[in-house]
Length: 286
Image 1 (spheres, rainbow, N blue to C red):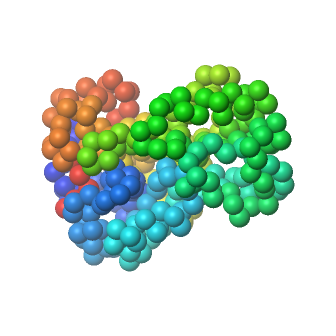
Image 2: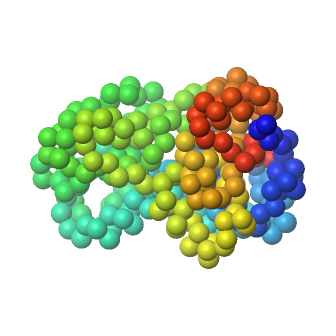
Image 3: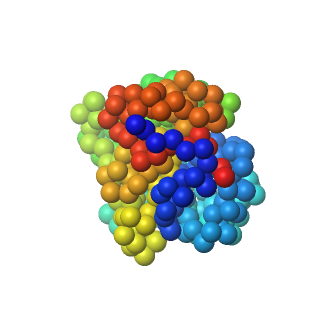
């Protein structure tokens, strides 16, 4: 039977861990506002001497994620590290491409991902060595918004670097926001080459463990709201995981955000998706 706990205090009693890998969107905040009780929970974890790494599939540099947390009054005293899929994408490009041009697919707010590198952004896919996708222009963008960009990339056989593998995220008001993973999956279906950076892929977990100075997996607990990224990624690394059900999974579980999911329904979801968390919790709170 799927294990469900009421709060983080119960989770840590059942699953002791010194190191916590915690998702941001869907656990800590919804991109705009923090979830209720988050700051108090982080304070309790700080008092318990837990080491916290925020691991996000945000398609931007880690410092941008830090700035978002600071605006929400979550300062660096409450966590130890922030790592994003955008940061891992940036580091890969920095090592692999020392010159040339790239084709950018995404909103202008994230166009600075590679701005400090000796590369040139081009609007001509025929002049690019690769393409990078960060997402859609707006929260309500149609799924085919970037079809012309993908057509241009496929004509020139560009490898596509996906800086956010998520398909969608959800705000606290229930609005679901499409992400770059949808665009990358479409490019693959067209026969294009895609490289993914972020959860559930291995490279981002290697970086996370390095920041933690490589503790054994049994000392780590991963906490996130998405089965396909947070939980699948943790499972692939042999790390215990906690599914937060107030985020993207609430609708599939048929619950209001913050409500306790029925164990039978949760098990049914695990069976359907063929991905199971070690435990579940309604929200990231004590």
